[in-house]
Length: 277
Image 1 (cartoon, rainbow, N blue to C red):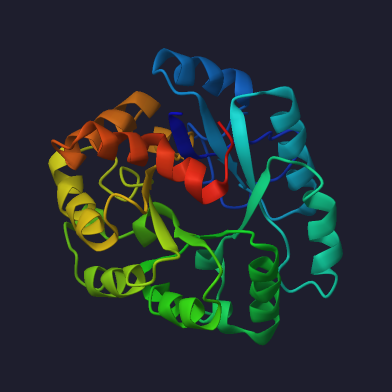
Image 2 (cartoon, rainbow, N blue to C red):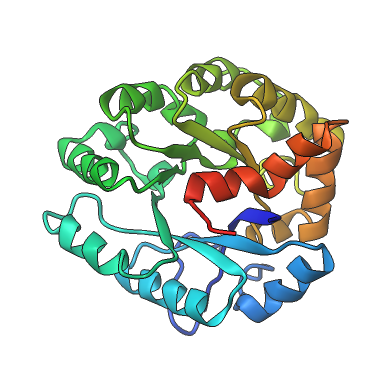
């Protein structure tokens, strides 16, 4: 299957999204399954992984309801409070739905750069490991040194770094990112999404060439077995369309055997999130 491994929906009538930019923005409207479904169909994609965009418990139920109604939503990565003493009960509830496939928390919004190493957070991650539930890491480069620590502590926990940990693409710099990114890649249960790149580049003047060094480094570090394409739609609309994201990914990847392309554009997402064909 061809799978977009990272996209969002939101409903401004239902939830408040505090991270959205103030004032007029392309993001300040509802984005729902009927908006994405024709885009995926036109580009011969079979489905997507729907990822949290809010930190309220009710969003998880809403996303799972959407997945029940729309076959193309193959997996849901929801927010849960990892610090909740009753986390196990919450996960029991969510795991009753077959398309609940993972958890994410916006770590990069936490004031404490070492939030992931708090004891209450570690207890939550231990519960994910026990249940074999993967964890999406929403990070910035400053957080990358924490990934090997987590990988050592939770050797069976599947983790995926979203958006390459947001390297400084707009500055055309790999400094402060490349070495720590490579260190995180040393752990076989750590994967990475080739997503969110055009919004880390200059929104108005980015070119595929600006993304190439980051994609090449990711391919060297993770290899074709642990990388997956994600559009980050509709956030990507700040800098380009869904199709422009796919084209930039394809061009930055360069010539590759068909089996490699198939892995990056769907096979690896199915393997990581245990999506049945």
